[in-house]
Structures are given as C-alpha cells and as structure tokens.
Image (cartoon, rainbow, N blue to C red; front, side):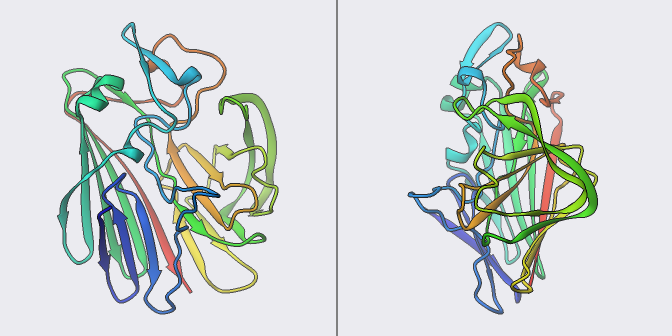
Length: 286
C-alpha cells in the first residue's frame, strides 16, 4: 500500500493512496504519533474520507430520478484507490474520478481532489468536489480523522456551547428523533470510557470555529478548525485510546425515507461545472 510523505522542521505527515487517507502525523521534536494507527481488533480505520454520503442510508439504498441505487455506509471514497496528482516538500494532492464501479452506484461524473499542506506545525486538508456533469450533482462529504488520546482527555470548544446529540439506532445506524444533552453553556467534553456506548455524538448548531484536544496530564494539544461544517461527529469505539473529530457536510439518514436523493437532509447540491470546497485544519502543539 503506497504511502506518501511530506515534512518540515516540525511535523512529518503520511497519506495512503488507498482512500487518500491520513495515516501519520509525527512530531519531529518528540517523535509522538498523533494519528491512531489502526487495530483490526478495535477499529481498522485512521482518517477515512466520507463521500458521496456521510453515515448510513435507510437499507443502504437511495433513489435518484426514479432509479434505485445501493451505497455502503460512508460511501466509496474511503475504499477507493486515489492517484497522486502532485507532490512537493510541503504539499501533496490526490484525485479520485468516476469509474465503472462508482457509476454503478453513483451516476455522476466527478473529481474528488484532496490536498494535504503543512506549514510549521499546522496541517491543512482541502477537499474539492468537481461536478463534471451537465446537471446538478448531489453529495455529502465528511472527514473522520482519529487522534491518539487517553480516557480523561478533553475536547474543548473555543466558545461556550449548549449542544445536544442526536441519538442513533444502534442496529441500523440511523438518526432517531430523540436527543441527549451534551453541553449546557460549557466548553469541555470529557472523553470517558462510556461516552460512545450509544455510538457517535452528532452535534449541530455549533458556534465555535475550533475544538482542542487537550489533557490535564501533559501540554500536548491538537487544535482542530472545523471548517464551518454544519455537523460535527465525535466518536470512538468505547474505551479505545483515540477520538475521531469529524466535521460533516451531510449526515446519516433518519428513519423517514425521502422520495429522492436530492431531498436528503443536509445534502449538498452542486451546479454543473462548479466546484465545492471543504477544508479542515489541525495545529499540533507540545
């Protein structure tokens, strides 16, 4: 599995061609690995890119213009081989375009271009979705990076938030109408061994631009810019030593089936020949 690297005096970043998935961010000062390294017995992923859906569809199917299609959870990009488009000392760009396999489950012509850029101790990840069709293209897009952490670490928003999480049907991975409170005019979510027993926290209406992963035990932090995404997923396997910070431009289906994919909650609609950009950023400090 080909992995490509960029580095500077502060960090070394590795990205796999498969899924254009972030696989490593190592501090040049301490050697600390910030990215979860994957474990088949816990969770094999590291930082999958979610496209052209986020989460799960009802019965893993959707209807577009009267035709039914089957789409796996989180879409196909995370399990597709991207092509390295360009690379220099501090930037590398990968591309995935439509092919016969994607057209069978997603009938659009597209380019998904993902660019990783480092500047000092900052990593910027930019996603461009290009609509190559003569009509409007519908999709969702999300990031899913997993950062190494410990139980008791803190996710700290940069503003006081009052937030509740949408509940998930644990059998079908669909959103339910019930909500559970998470924050009440507060900034800190403490990562406990039980916090993800009912799956991800799915948050919306966030005022903060950033959330920082930090600890009372050390000075190491990851300050994550959410990129103005309308949803934020926070997830890990219960009691696992990582946490996923997941800005989403899209969301799981709820239990109400819509007639057409274009009516899906939080779906992005992109006119012909236009480009949709979503960028997140992480600053690694010690």
